[in-house]
Length: 168
Image: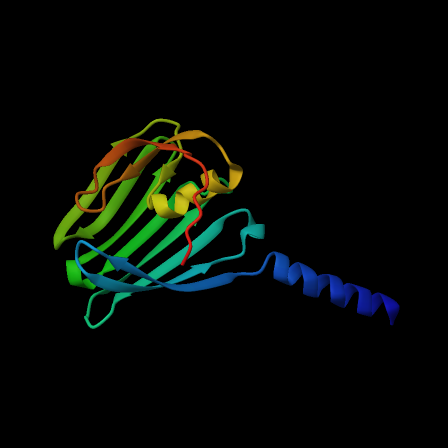
């Protein structure tokens, strides 16, 4: 009986340490004056690959969409899917070695792209990818990303400028 209780407690504790997470929050876009409700689901990182699904919905509007990403342990994107019915967008992207492959529909136009990139980490969504950069406390990081408006890839640099305290 002692072993059963010990194993149960250990599994209970490990379940919380490696559990899947869902975050719900709102963002306000000053440019468009829209409040966006975001639901972010993160799959279990213990599997070696991280799956993050982000659903968004603009309040008082029919605008909504979804992005699902499969990331490696450094939060670099391996595979991603974007669906945005309002923008007539539904495509899949994948990194294969030093190639980015994107296929589907973007802004109501067919897309079938192959783009060469270097060995830098690739973040289809820098907001997600840079989380590991922040957690590790690195001072600088170069990475690749794509612009969501035209699906062109770019080299970018993140630079840690320290911690800022915000009082709410």
